Length: 183
Image 1 (cartoon, rainbow, N blue to C red):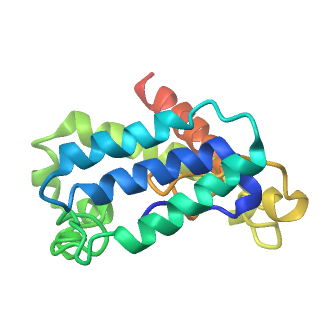
Image 2: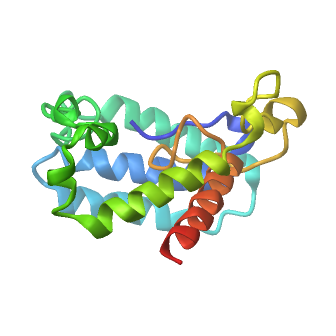
């Protein structure tokens, strides 16, 4: 399912674009996909340069209603997408990285470079954690709760449970750690 943000965050252009993508993906369920896609694109191109916003909003509303009535009764869902037959099928087989700590030293000796860098990284991670690990401090990444900044909404493919501000902080923090490890 596509990311759906509150209407206040989306511009009209974004709404039209997301509607077009959603409608195009639903068209793949029909047997004459390319023909219907061409017809739909022609309908969008016909009203591409609409200057009157009330008419543009009305056109979008009518198109969404038309889409609702004409959508496929059993839309195609990719097998590894949410709702697909093999969605998260292999999640139960993933092993956490902590299992490497249980390896015997003779096993670790087969990969000395990897385990040396891993130990160095674990040590750095322990030193550079946010102050939340100390008792009585605020939890990490707490500022978004306190100040509620204006920020762009993340898509579902990014980290849906984190704001983009948090993702940026985590990415910068991770890159800094990787740089220190590789030195």
